[in-house]
Length: 413
Image (cartoon, rainbow, N blue to C red; front, side):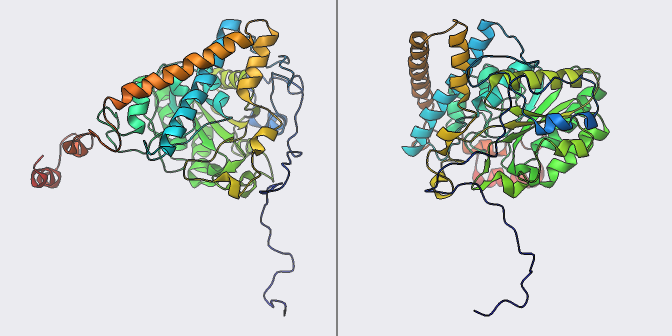
């Protein structure tokens, strides 16, 4: 074959993951430091003082389940057990809902397997008055804030009790009473929204801060850069979380620049202090969020946090991860399972045991089963009843313009 006369001798580089389907998982690039390797900076530190925090990995729990280091929040057994319960409940809920989607009882679902601690631990470190701007794998925040599970299920099957009246995809939750902002299907819109909300809170002299979450792939969106600029310039009291779960749908983190530098390091260029955290260590996520929240409430501005974790399940029920990564790669993830790590820690404290753990799992499975049975009493996706047709005109305008009123009249509703 004749060489292409227009070919670039330097070549065209496309990042590739370390392993593809049929190959052995390879996570040798993940540098796992000991819990005492990364110290805790002063809460008023400057961005350029956090280079080591953007490249290291903040950890509290060793893989042996023992807590240590400066970041150890030293929570009591009751607080740890509550986090364990919520992480487990989130996983139990996800498993049930995933199966129901496969049975045709809902159109779509997204699990958070392996990432539950990212949401639950952060929620526990925030105040209930703080506004959260989540992505679509933070259902653990809803459980942490006491959201009714039946209401969550009714939304997912778009029945007559769906608080979004069928206008959003399943798992795109919203809950105004719980300060849980509507999830958007458009990537990264929540980042600048969170910054704007935080700026408004500060301008009003309020104490509430904002927190938001996006995935690693979403950092390639323009809204990411706009949000960081605003947050830095105006010292917005906001925590901006990048959940690096290694995969953005079917493209791995390197496509978004994760091989060149950590996602945390991007914050420094915008003048934001940054932290890089073991996302499968609930205590580390809690401690880092608590530090960033204290910084925000003290008037020192925003923090960018990268939580390093792994998406154990498919991106969604529309995705087949077996086409782009090794089967069961999740089981080889060197930072382990957030549920198992917290459980082992509690075992080591003699605050929990296998018998009580199995009892909890059984009770949660039954609780979720009964919740779905109740949700179905308000209608199903296939058979209804659904939200009334007239509701499509509600909650859009304070005063409906003439053409909308005409459309409603034409429909006779």
